[in-house]
Image 1 (tube, one colour):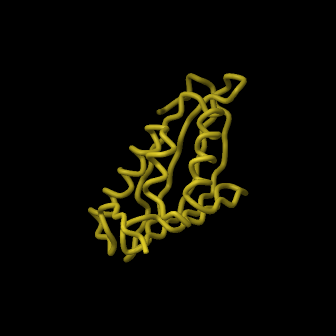
Image 2: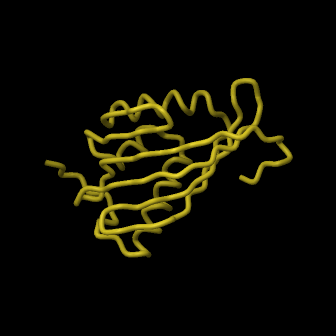
Length: 138
């Protein structure tokens, strides 16, 4: 049983779904894996690109490695749709890879929350596009 709660709680309204999306954007832009992981259930299920990640500890490990490789990371998320306990977002983020080249990643995420407002499922489809530094938007 989860004792933690992460507000706002489902069922979502348009306002609370937008708030949840903004909270996620802010957390990910902190690039703090421990902070980000607190939004997920201890047994969370992820698909991130072609990787399958299970559990909060695995999320911390994944994000730690991600942000060691992705420098100058900046993310924007936008609410796409929502229902009772599910939210769909579109997003884009930019970062520099290990060689210093700029990349913009585009994608969609489907989120499912438990009754305590913790994300129990996250499915992300992401595509990368090399960009020139002059093409940066974020």
